[in-house]
Image (spheres, one colour):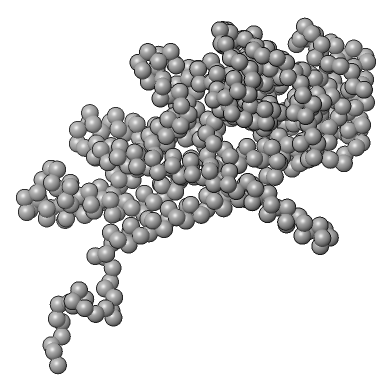
Amino acid sequence: MEPDGLLSGIYRTFQIVWESFPQLLGGALLTIEITIISVLLGLCFAVPLALARVSSNPLLRWPVYGYIFYFRGTPLLVQIFLIYYGSGQFSDFLEDIGLWTYFREAYFCAVLTLTLNTAAYTAEILRGGIQAVPHGEIEAARAVGMSGGLLYRRIILPKAFRLALPAYGNEVVFLFQATSLVSIITLMDLTGVARVIVARSFHVYEIYITAGLIYLTITYGILWVFRKVEFHLGGHLRERPATAVGSKAVVAPTVAPR
Amino acid sequence: MKKLATMTIAAAALALFAGNASADMQKVRIGTEGAYPPFNSIDSEGNLVGFDVDIAKAVCEAANFDCEFVVQDWDGIIPGLLAKKYDAIVASMSITPEREEVVDFTNKYYNTPAKFVAADDADFDISPEGLAGKSIGVQRATIHENFLRDNFPEADIRVYATQDEANADLVAGRLDLVMADSVALSDGFLKTDMGKGFAFIGPDYSEPKWHGKGVGIAIRKGEDELREAFNAAIKQIREDGTYEEIQSKYFDFDVYGKPTS
């Protein structure tokens, strides 16, 4: 390509990206919104599910096991199709019981599917955390008289959350990227917007690379938040800074004063 | 397992044999969608069927091409052509100025108007103001999507990967209307069990700016030899009665539209 053609090509690329950027950002907002709602709701469901999963009562354990097995064992795409088009097939029944106003909206179906999906994964991650709490700590708690709810609230769950955090960070990133699937049920998330622009302009590379960079930036933000939270929760596990001064840094006197 | 192996060998032998037999024929791969009845769809046995498919086969025979079909989702069908996954698109693709910037087209092989469909008791005022806020389903990356976005900007336009999905949502009550090619809607939806209780509403739309010059075969830019071969083949099947024979299999009216000038 001639230098002239190359320059104008680069210029045109930037122009295309610049013109479509506001639309893409609008889509990214919906992506973030769906991710946050699903992650928060999913976490709320996941805690009782994880407790039921480790329960000794089979009536609690087995239904939850089945639920987790289904949502981890089938593709998210199938789950979205099932809940969106599946509910469409039973719209009369859902209308009778008053649920159709919710299932009518693609937004509701998307958030519902993503919530159920991430709740299953998160419950399994939390179960791992709960079972990884050292036995000695539980024994120690029992020795001072803790049991039942108090034991879980004070000892097991805080420790389990801390143990599960790195894996949970992964799950949130996965869910964030999985939201791109909602564009197939008509939602205009980042991927949906990108597809609409590409369909009309045929600038496949320019638009998808831009969309990819936006996803990358947001993923970086999620990772940053989790790093901060991990740092915050792991304070007692870090070595104290050697040069720190002040009352907080004063450790037990190990050497005799000279 | 053994049976599968035998079948594989048989298939390979067959392919080899077919390859030998047509050694002098030009191989042309045809991209199509397979989800747009009655033009192209996949039947219960997994075969590609429909008007587009039959026309493609007839055109290939007339041009003496050895054709092979490749199924590709609609919104990736032009990128797939440009990426050389196949050499031509025969998938009810309308010839529009936007598409002509990236691909070349043969002359049209049919031309039918676009229409809206809604519940048969619906009473919509079909105008940009009348449809403001109404949800309209349309297939992604089609002339109908562009037409709606430019002419009904106030409507709630929802895009679907396939027309079948848009129709399903119309039946479910998530959409007020759908827009697509009139024949695709009539044969692919209204005449089926699913389409009971729905009907065409509003005028025929056939605006060259959006709906183009009819439906043609898309090929990569600059492949003039292939385009001319297809054009000659389309002309031939129009003249020798093959076209009418295929048309009568699917439609009881003329889908070719006005002769090209």
